[in-house]
Length: 112
Picture 1: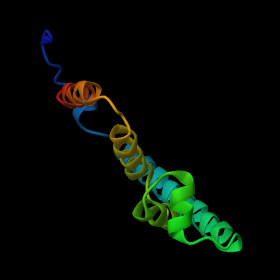
Picture 2: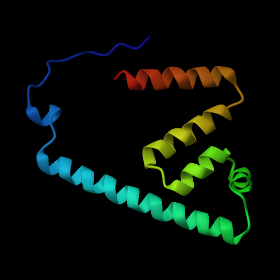
Picture 3: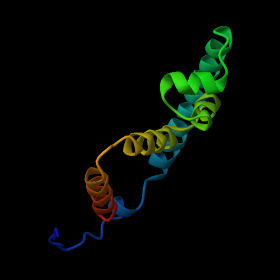
């Protein structure tokens, strides 16, 4: 079991609240990311259709489920994509002890 020392907490606003400029910048970045995801998704769909593949066939070729291929074409956000990839990779770990260790690591990191 890991223990961590807790020092005095800073009362600085910079740690707890984002500046208005940072919030606007983050919104722009998210908007641009979504635009890019939609563009890439449209290109994937176009290419799939040009090759005469169904979404299921594409999913089988790239090693994801039909639902994941569908979401990729819709242009999901990077965080969702990362979660999907994490779940897929976790399911492919053959050793249950390794899966358990990874699960414990994720819990520990989430509680920080």
